[in-house]
Amino acid sequence: MAFSSQKGKLFTEINITPLTDIFLVLLIIMMVIAPSFQSMDNAISIPEINSGIAIEQKNATVSLTKEGLMYLNGRQIDSDNLVSELVNLKPTLEAPDLVVKADESVKSSEIMKVMNAAQDAEFKKLIVAGEPLSKKEQKTLKENSKIMIDEEQ
Image (cartoon, rainbow, N blue to C red):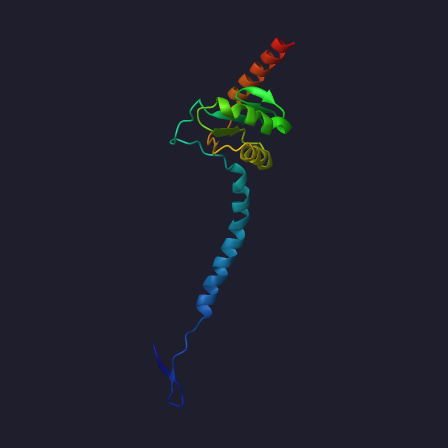
């Protein structure tokens, strides 16, 4: 719409007052709703994987529990000896693959230590299991390591 002014010129400017009012209302709505987005992050849980490749048992498996214990193929080991254990285990494997299974509360720095150890031991492939170490698996690992320690003594 063009309006004529007193001098005969056309008035072609847009009135932005209603537009500004709409933006201010939207801004107020976002300011009220924004704090609720932050509290939603606490409810996030890791999704389960419904598809993918099954992990073959011929691979070496490093399991990390939430207590910080490390197991190599079900046998408890010290994280400082991981590289030497992997080097010793590598010739017995059909494929030089390493599977890492960890509890969801394990820090990523611990997983990075396993990755670096696998690289130092010259493993060709590292597989991070998509499903975390379940409580049942952790309990089984602990029981098996206690049995192995008792047998050694």
